Image 1 (cartoon, rainbow, N blue to C red):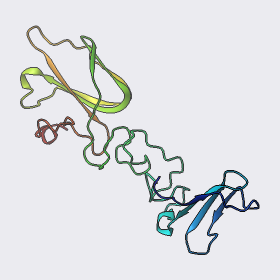
Image 2: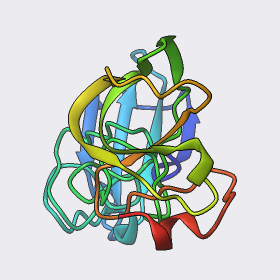
Image 3: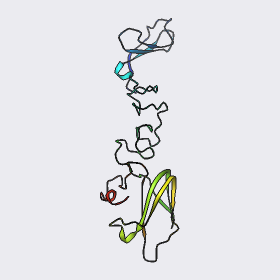
Image 4: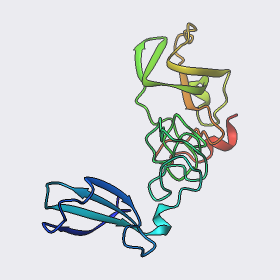
Length: 190
């Protein structure tokens, strides 16, 4: 984790050394971790006090804690964006900089009236007449918790079609794509 540094490895450990020892053994203000591999060999790692800080007292030092100011002993990170769920402003959708989170899932039309994606997620959706896609005028919409499909039993009239948009149901959910296409969407849609 780049926090502990190996400071010694060799074969001159005394045979009465601990099999495993932790603490400031040499009195230099830095904790050591001593691991004896055999009766006469082992490794010593040392940690700088600044790297040993654990502000939230959850047992994970700040240098590797994915949420250093809020206790989260399990280090849960559902969206794998390196921000722990306890600190993440959008838990189900990756946004490592905590900026706008986009849906980021492949949506497949499983039937003429059903769309699916994986993994399941909490989403906001809108539907509009395809003729109005330039203005994003919508006629239907809603929210779904931990869903993996959207079913719309309404079939568009002959010669017409619908557009559908999905976004994360979180405070920073964005209608944008991950490529940032069509920047006016967030301003127009609810």
